[in-house]
Length: 365
Image (cartoon, rainbow, N blue to C red; front, top):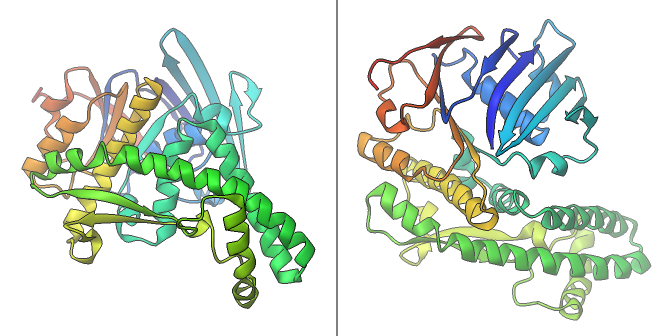
């Protein structure tokens, strides 16, 4: 899949325009705060119907406007798609080839977009929910059934939490069974994705870091060895007093943990910020490789100034590791030594200033 063009109006600080994106590599050069990340956010919006930066739609609309609109044209083999997104305060509407999208998974399966951003370091060093979100997103990229299961799990979880607050023992027994059935499925799928990642991630990290260090991912489910409905239900029943104290369900996939392990210890306990940043980049590379292996399709990569903090050697090795994509879209600072030669001759480059984009030509190809 590849983006061909993007038309935008009223979106953040971007000056209304139509941009050609029809190249394997698209490069946006500009100082911070000029609109580079906003452009990547717009492409993410037409792919997922949501932002990777905020949940507040008002923040995505220019201060002088009441609404924003995005229209992207994309191709996948012989098929051409048009997605339109209409953004107003409190609402987002999507249209695929003129028909309103009722469920975002209709678009997610068509537009495999993976974004590399500075916030990805939270997957490594942030709270457990950031790691759960990463691996759930990895599964949802290619498995619509998992997305349905995850939605059902959190719907039942909300219902059970309300029953905990109401001290409704009858409903708790019903929700325990439902939560166990769906939750066991979620846990098994997470076990599978971690196993697959441990076949991809350690080698990628060693290659990019240049270090002979074994780094792998460990999954620790909240329900641990409880693998049947009966075992989970007994566990949930035994924990009801604790649940009542905290007024919530205190065990289940929503409490699962993922750890990065090196030399038998948690990597984040001793890793520097630079090492954590590198791990977050390699995780996204592994996510792209995982998607490619499972679907035999090539994703689009959005890379937002993520090479800036890498030393030249690791930057070169990281770029070399980025293989197997249909399109990669980069943002860079104007004077950054980003090694454009390694991105091939098929590229479009824009200079970005105050939300406006001007196509330019780089002479060091």
